[in-house]
Image 1 (cartoon, helix red, strand yellow):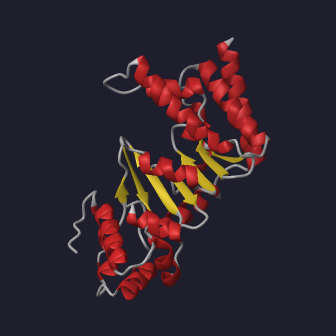
Image 2 (cartoon, rainbow, N blue to C red; image 1 turned 45 degrees about the vertical axis):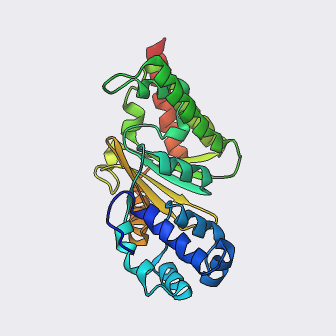
Length: 274
């Protein structure tokens, strides 16, 4: 099996697993039982959405008698560029039981209000048409439905103070946006922490980060920058992401103090809007 380090490598890895499994006369369920993995995890690997851990790959090699190819080609899967910038992460977001996000400059997508999100979509070049903005807005607001369930997913949001101070969409839109975050925090639907400017440098200041945990799949970390994003499920990268998140969280305000600050900034915007 020759798998090169390219955007299609996971898909080809998954196709090879499916081919070897079927040649062995095994269903996904039968292979999952023998390999001590969930059937869902097997399905995600075969679809090119996830990678096995080194131990999983070794067990797959043993059961399917492959001569070690699944373990040998794991390094080609270290990180995956996200098609359409966010598609893979968006799918995982809908499946996650726990989401812990850090936002450096913008309110996280699942927390955005309509006017705030529209202002975000109206930036950039070439400019989007009204129709394109409307389509993007529907998709973004639909993501927020994961918060309709009062308990799952568990969401922690770590916001740089710049998120509160950057005037996106004008004073009225910002006031509405911040009041929305406060409401979710007061209802204990989300937990909010603000990293104040006074904290100085911190472990996550270079980019947006989202950590996600699942019921029967390994956790992932999604990192986003300009016009690009990457999902990592390599255990060492995920562990580093967790360590940096908790390190930055230690420099943040408490949930109560964060809500007080967000309310205060919202009031400032409301006075400006009057």
